[in-house]
Structures are given as C-alpha cells and as structure tokens.
Length: 104
Image 1 (cartoon, rainbow, N blue to C red):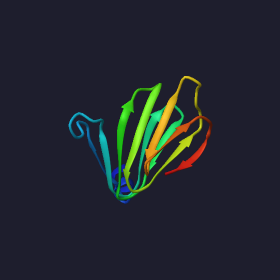
Image 2 (image 1 turned 120 degrees about the vertical axis):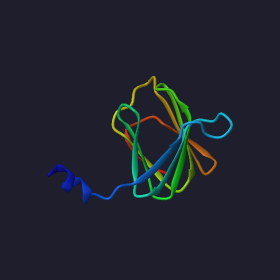
Image 3 (image 1 turned 180 degrees about the vertical axis):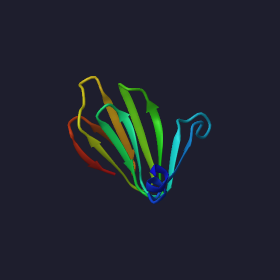
Image 4 (image 1 turned 90 degrees about the vertical axis):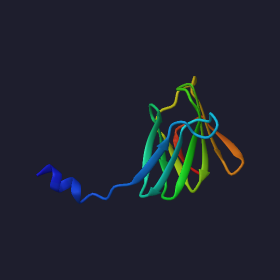
C-alpha cells in the first residue's frame, strides 16, 4: 500500500559531489524538480531545477553557500547572533541577519 502511494510522487534528481573541484566544498546539482537542504537549524536552502550550489563553508556558525548556476531561495525561520550565514550569487555576497525569505 505505501509503495503505491510513493510511486506516484515525482522524484527530483539531486546529485552531491562531496569532493568538489580541487578541494573545494561539496557541490550540489539539481537536474530536475526541486531540492531542499537544511543549512543550520531554522535555515532552509531551496534549489530550483537545473541549478547548482557549492558549500564554501559548512560550519554551523560560519556557513557560506555559492549559487553557481540557476536559482535558489533561502527561508530563515530562526537565526542566532552567533550564526554567520552568507550566500554568494552573481558576484555579490549576502549575509543573512534576520528572519525572512531570500531569493537568489
């Protein structure tokens, strides 16, 4: 019964290259559908179709993600003063300092 329910749900193709290029952080490629990644508690990175992101710094208090291709959004529902969360996109680095919905 449960298999029948889940077979009808379209799946996204999201690939993570944990080694990256020449020692860089993990790179996520989303070929179809959408993907959601929990960056820190209360901070959700959502990646659109045909998009690629790279974890520049994966630490909980020093988190940096680069949007390399396509589109991504970040929803912040809880952020602490010790968090340093940055998103790099189109040559600009955005530091997330308050709750909200960010589009890149």
